Length: 318
Image (cartoon, rainbow, N blue to C red):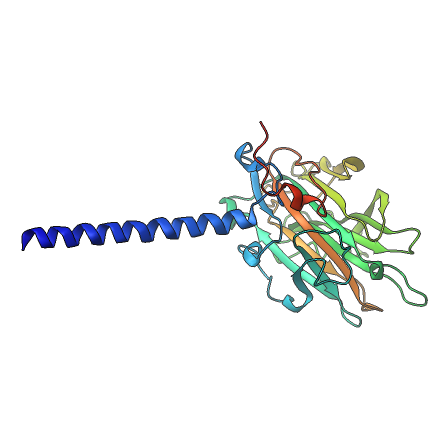
């Protein structure tokens, strides 16, 4: 009897161990599916300790930790070259497609809050993502292209520094989002920063656009990198830089966003919103892929999204 009981206990322990191992393996597979070579081609996360967030938009796992992601869920979806008419046939894997429909303002507006993710809010950050503008993002005959917001940095705290709520004294909120302007087929898309600095005049309630020194063509994947360092409270020494395909296209070192160190970088803001009172004249489509946020240095361009599938199983480089 005692031997039988002991034998049964061993069987139970072995079964429990196998269940735990299987569950852990499933978790590893789930994570690796999202953090594969599509995001950081050589699994650079093993070599860097400053990566805050990264996704290749391969599964809905990417939405974990993002606030407001379901508000405009119908305007976003994960697609490949077979499910989106706008991506070229050479594209491999998936990307995030954002649609701003005719007659509407919103594409998406979701935020990754850093206090919840890191336990604190940083004062400087690097961001890298790939983007692709469909031809319908720009002007058409008698129909204006997209004019509005793009991904960038948020420190509004839901109080000031966006949406016609000026940054009045540098103590309640600021922002430095991206800005997009879809122009003609020849001119492409202008990209820039759209910032709410400390207000210097009392009669203007909106932000200011600082355009990058390079336009982006339609129908081509490009690498966008953004960097921000908040100003010393009370001083005009805030820094913003941007790179397109590894070329520096913007640098300004005298931004004045805050007058108190209570204001930090609250979140990263995935935001496509047609500004002003006039909604979109026609449908617009834009795509995002390979988003990385890092704390201490640039991520840099990796592999083009349409080629990334070739190296998904690549071993880490030494």
